[in-house]
Length: 317
Image: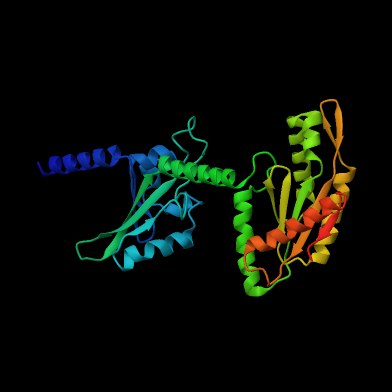
């Protein structure tokens, strides 16, 4: 009768371990497998009888032995549970995903709990690893992060040119102005405007005007540095913020942009369209009380370039 009770107990424990939708692994102090449930068998294709009493690390090279032992040590020595979340480490065991068709990911994201199993004497001679499949949670979280990044980019970027839009450019400009007030570094701001843009629209149509605006944006992107902040300020007007750049260096850059534009031809349908730009430059000055004063100085220089015949670069006094 005692044997029957023992078999019955073993049977329901086996059914329990096999029916739960988490991985259960019990390791002894030598990290040899003592329990390997159905979940682990299904995802590893390793049957319990084959892995029992064998070292876990011999079967799963992706599990860094030194790292795992450091993680598991508190369970053995302090009798406290240890948690590993997928944001810190995507998985403990590299199992394939159950969602091969619907998921773009090729492995199972896992949360893992390691907790101590005390013996009758109170010492911890074994630990239990519980593996949770959190692929859906992880993929949803990553999807939200990706979407947020896309929305953030959309909120910052001008749809026509790919440069920063006016709102975001002005935010960066104001931050740079505050930095300049503290450090008095030799930074500069540039305003550019397409000459006779209304005539281009009236002659060739607004789609042609859009092509001209896009072409200028591409020229600006190629001519400026990664640290420069370029934006479409409005309509056919552009702004460039050049941190830590004295006016003398900016003159060289803007003159290069002016010449590149002058030589460039926009092909729209059967039309060849040439255009020029007028440019104003203002270096930072401590006399500017607000960031708008600095920008107005560049805008006034741009206005003078227009007044003096266009297709020119002018400096603010």
